[in-house]
Length: 308
Ligand code: GLV
Image (spheres, helix red, strand yellow):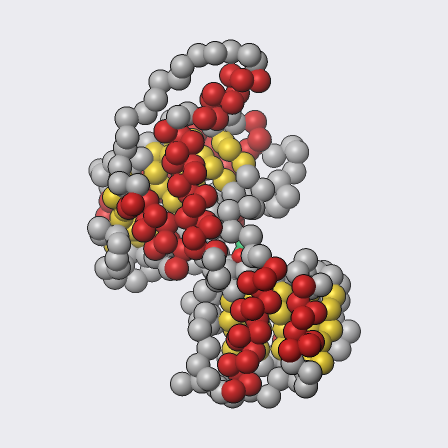
């Protein structure tokens, strides 16, 4: 069932705010304010649209909070909303784009492309030893993103298992477990992190996990803070991890002095796997608002208790 809400004034923040001015035209009865991310809120609002909370925002007054990203940790981890607050998020083409990024990593590794590119820099023509085609992948998270990764990789002939909060079986995963320890002794070519950042997943990928499941390659398209970066480096040193493709890191932008840059087996990409496109930001925010004002059920809602 839907929840009708009377939304009258909405604050929009972040890099997509210019594109979101379109909302003013579509919802003439609502007053919208637009601000850069990090600028303090100057009034009280009943609606909020952004990637992260504006400082000084009166959280208790908010009826509706809409995330411009698929990840809602920027809104929820520091926020104390009233229990009735409706939190929604933008998903759009994100799962498909992120799954495509993962496919790219697997293909790059099939040709050892990072090594080949490093040799290019030094004008060295040398055929690398190419890996056999390993087929087992373990995906962490069975939400829209984790499942789409598994669909796309299945089409490439990979067999995907998963770890999820519920452990409930879900297509197209061969097997889903609540605890990664259930996979101890099984060999995986890849571990792929598609978990949301919540109080429960902070520092989830630690030495214990890497030593239980390694050796394997690793992809992080979730959030940087779910990984203990010192443990990841230790696991690389111990050869428990092979190549690591990190689209997200605990600190972004990743500072020049970070040791992550210095490992040749780490490929850093600057949070590009699943960027929200302007058009989908506008269309999803508008569709969500239309449904709220009509009292219709709203998709892409976030469970405040679970945090995703
Ligand atoms: C990007 O990281 C997002 O949450 O959409």
